[in-house]
Image 1 (cartoon, helix red, strand yellow):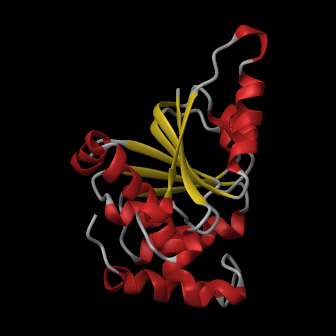
Image 2: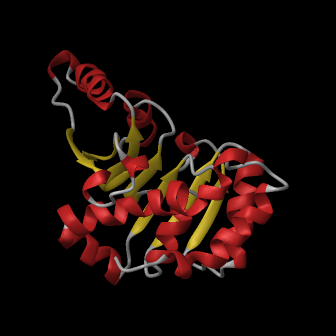
Length: 207
């Protein structure tokens, strides 16, 4: 992945404009839009580049359908859609005003590989190759919402006490003799030396 801040200049300008009308990024954080939101979203691409190069190759080739669960104003879906123009992204959120921002930004950037849906993810009757999400809910809640809706894996941007969260997830889905899905973690600080990424991870749920 060789994208730079300059590649995303129009995206940054659009978000700053929309954020002055509909608050999708906290006021104190808007000045760090690139570092804390756009680049953070692209850490998923960084994970694929470092850990799953064969998956990265398939995303670059295209024909992959990706669901962004709880996209808010379009993170991580819009930066990823910009970076992977041959993939199809469905951005889903239950809050209408946030989806309005995501849709407006995608339209202004002419991201024809993006479709925005104002709905609860449980209501989607579609199948995807991958699910991506950013700090929407506890893994134990996220997984049932999309179980059976994807064939590849689920990539979650998470921070905080992830070991406790993963332990709760495994305990819940190992109940009654079931085998819990495999969970892998990758520290984003391996990809970016920005101190803000200390304690932030990409969590990969397989199956």
